[in-house]
Image 1 (cartoon, one colour):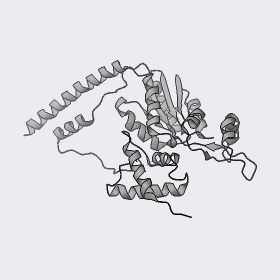
Image 2 (cartoon, rainbow, N blue to C red; image 1 turned 135 degrees about the vertical axis):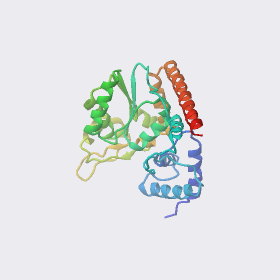
Image 3 (cartoon, rainbow, N blue to C red; image 1 turned 90 degrees about the vertical axis):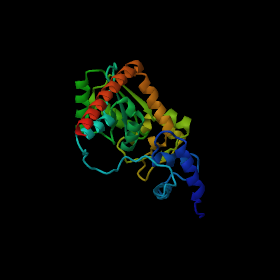
Image 4 (cartoon, one colour; image 1 turned 90 degrees about the horizontal axis):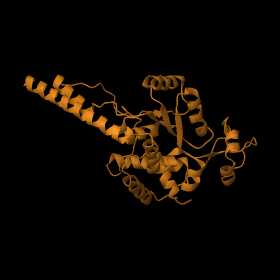
Length: 292
């Protein structure tokens, strides 16, 4: 068996990351390389890609990848009140959704992709909801309470994997919370998988929802027929949301959000925020001057 020549693969990987003006995760990069048929869709190449890019990133020889799973934890502190006010001015913001007719939530099945959504849409101030699989009673209650206290009709724009559980997780959450005026699943769909040529994997026939999933989507299971397992159960397909080009995922969320977003109202809110920031900076300058 010939050994993989990683040099051209890593060079192409770096080109892919630099081609985006939005953050990209390791798994999204991996699927781009799989779709270009540069590496196999398997655990071994994924781990090798992770190790090789991490080594180069530590040497500043590979562009950064998105990873919000780790960080240094330490309480904030300031030299004096003037320093504290100056710091507040650096991150102060009003509720940027104020005045909008509806409360828009952006939901995603995976925690890592929720971090990307925060980076992409932080400027709008909309809540981002990482389900991380089937949601818990705690998150269900928090969402329902927030929607109720907000008072506006709530809209959920959601994306998840195309597999037996991924297609059910959103439904389960929506049914359990029962607080949405409208919900919209923008990915993944059977049509997107075929149109974009996304990698189709073997799912888990042991999943309790597998049989119903196969019955609900017979066409894709005929096109990608993985047969049966040792117990005669049909092997379902599985397509991960990470396989979707991050730029495409970003655009899908952006276009869906635009259907509910009033840019004129948003502009007025930002104007008020700028005025508040000017006040904070003036107070910080006055305190700094008094201390001097």
